[in-house]
Image 1 (tube, rainbow, N blue to C red):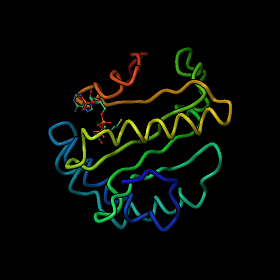
Image 2 (spheres, rainbow, N blue to C red):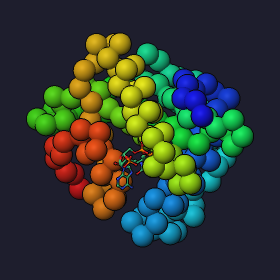
Image 3 (tube, rainbow, N blue to C red):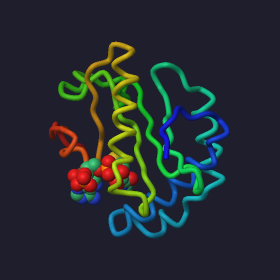
Image 4 (cartoon, protein in one colour):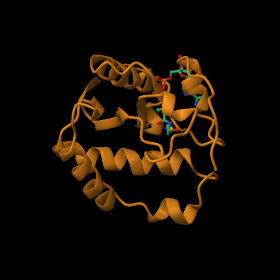
Length: 157
Ligand SMILES: CC(C)(COP(=O)(O)OP(=O)(O)OC[C@H]1O[C@@H](n2cnc3c(N)ncnc32)[C@H](O)[C@@H]1OP(=O)(O)O)[C@@H](O)C(=O)NCCC(=O)NCCS
């Protein structure tokens, strides 16, 4: 398994991880109807656009298994929450972990932690030394961030 920067040709692999992981991780939290409406091609197209427009402050990493292909990905960048609103808590944070997903069967093997390290390293290289992440309140995966040193800041909605 290796973790590397992603390119446009990774769009379908990323889309599959996104859709499959949403379906396994958010079952019972997000409606089945919505989860079933997700599809690889729709996601691939959105993802392609975002991959094309990657820049130093908005970037993707993938975790790739030799046999299985892409098994996880993470997106990092500038903090994006309500850009026009000066939220007193979130606006103190410059960077954001915008997404991170690892296929269910590859979870708890240290891949997520490696992806987060890559995102942090990239942000630090651009002198961005704070980062937040939004997590669904109901998700058990919150523990992952706490384990990596994340601290609860606020909640919304
Ligand atoms: C959250 C996620 C990215 C973590 O990736 P991962 O590869 O499973 O995480 P790691 O193996 O690097 O975990 C590092 C540590 O975090 C903690 N941790 C991770 N997942 C956990 C879980 N489900 N429950 C409890 N602790 C967990 C553990 O302490 C783990 O170390 P350990 O296995 O040695 O005990 C992945 O599980 C995932 O895609 N989850 C579903 C989607 C999701 O919630 N994404 C985040 C959206 S905000």
